[in-house]
Image (tube, rainbow, N blue to C red; front, side, top):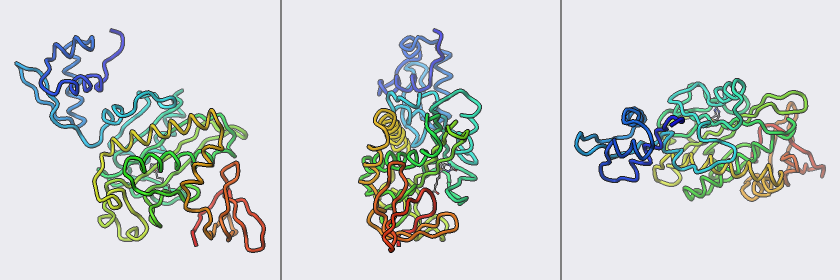
Length: 327
Ligand code: BTN
């Protein structure tokens, strides 16, 4: 008995017994003491599980929380990039991107996920605020040590978009499209966004943090009035409330799958899937890049993931960053 029991082992045992199961049976099936079982039951209750206890019959699971680390882990299975123990759950944080960066910088861990139910200083691209109320949405950051130069980082944002859009489409049926480089849209409204940040030495990324925010069960009418016409949520689009645990598990699995594709097959499969999901290609766009505005038709993305814009004088301009407006 060298390893400490995890509360999700006790949880699986409870799930396998729809009726009561005794503490002694749980203890012997997991090879732990009854005191350890009791500690894990207390931890599960703290996470929002309702567990009946009867001195004669043992324990019975009667309700699961809508959002908990145990529920997320239960949906994951084996992942290549994110070991289950590296997935950290917080009630409230200033920003999951900041915490993920601190953790990956201070630990040897590669492949770390930070999730929060609420952010007090959630941030978006171009120093914007990411409104992050508790109890309704997903705020997560994945920290990695990819073996690539900083100029390749755009592919990580496109990859996160592909992973998020495919997982959410599969789970909810909502027709999510990708706007270059980092927006998840339904029609012209924003359902989610991606913020990739990194620390690099001149020619290598030391670590990258991919932050993903998804409006899941927020009702946009309940949010600040200035975002009413700009934002949407899965609940508003699908007309139903979803389990964030289920959606987050699917999102993490999809991220893991696409990172495996990138590491074994390179950027092209990511780019071709991004193109299929994109609503930017073929549109007239206006991009503020530094001090200049590039206007033209978004034709393609290149092998780096940069947007190729055909200007009215016929020249093709490669856009590597900036705020894109669909005109
Ligand atoms: C954008 O569209 O501008 C990007 C939004 C990214 C928001 C997410 S929420 C989780 C992570 N933590 C943050 O502070 N930001 C990202």
